[in-house]
Length: 421
Image (cartoon, rainbow, N blue to C red):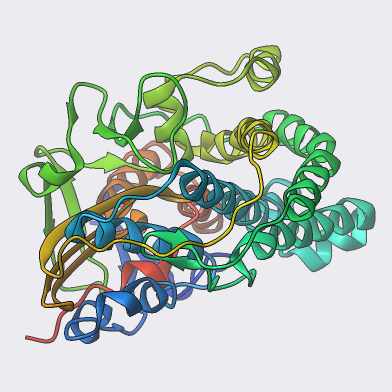
C-alpha cells in the first residue's frame, strides 16, 4: 500500500486563511479536506442587543471587501422587520453602490489573485514585471470603482449613507453625472478584461451541480428577487426550509446544502440561473464558444469578467434616469418584527435574518456566500483531483489552488458565524 499526503499549509491569493489536505492511497483519492482556520468573530452574538439603527453599520465590519453587500443586506432585513418602505430613488442609489462594489471586488479577484495563475507567476508584483501597463490599468479600475462607491456612500469602504429607509446624504445632479462619466470611462477596459479572461486556458473539469442565485425573470438581479435553483424558485423568507448548515470539526466555517444537495453561488451561478446577459457581453462570450448554463468550475473567473460588462451598462441606465435626491424623514410603522434581507454579494447569495423587539435586535442569522460554497468547493476538489491523481504533487497543488481561487473565497465573511454557546 502506497500512501501520499499532499498538504498546502496556507492557500495564497485568497482573502483570509485556509489550508488543504489531500490523502491518496494506491493512486486512489482517499480524502480532501478544505480547512478554514481563521479565528471566529462572533458577529451574530454581539449584534444581539443593539439598536436596529446600528445593525447595517456593524454588518459592514464583517468584511472590508464585501462591506457594501453586508450593509445593504442588513438594512433590507431591518426594513423588512419594521415595515419600512423606501422610495424608488433610494433603491436605485443602493443598486449603484452594489454595482460599483461588485466591479471593484471582481477586479481585485481577477487581476490580483486569479490572473497570476494563468501567467505562470507567483503574484501581481511578478505580473507587473512582465506587463506593467496591464497592472496599472487594473489599479486604475480598482480606484475608479472605489470612487463611484464613495460618491454615493460617503466612503469607499464601509459606506456611512446606508441607513434604514433612506440614503442619508444629498445626492446632487453633479454627483450622478460624475458617477456616469466614471463608469463610461472604465467601460472599454471592462470589455478588454472580459476578452482577456475569455481567452485564457482553464481546467476542463466539469461536475453537474446545483446553482443558486436571485432571480426576477428579466435581469441579473443584485438587490432583490426570489431565490432560484436550476429546478425551483422560492421566497427568500423560506430560506430555512431549504438551506441546512452544519459545523465540521476541521473548519471554522460552516458547510451547507440546499434541498439535500451541495451548491454553488456567485458569478457562474448567477449566469447559469438568469441567462440574461446583455448583447455586448453575450456576443463576446459566443465569440469564444462560451455559453451558459455551464458546469465548468473555473469559468467563475470569466463569468465575473462578463458580469462587469453587464453591470456597467445597467449602472449607466439607472444613473441616467436618476434626478437629484434629498434625504427625507422616514416613517417607522413598528418597533418589533422579524425580517430577512437577501441580496447578491460579489461572491454570491448573502442572507441576513433579524428579529427585533422594542427597537433592539434579539436574533441574528447570517449566511455568507463562502460558507454556502464550502461544501461545493470540497466536492469539486475531490472530483478534479481524482482525475489528475497520477500527476506529481506540485502539479496537483497548483491545479487545486486554481479551483479554490476561482471561487474567490472570502474567509473573513465565512467565519463570522460561530455563536457563543
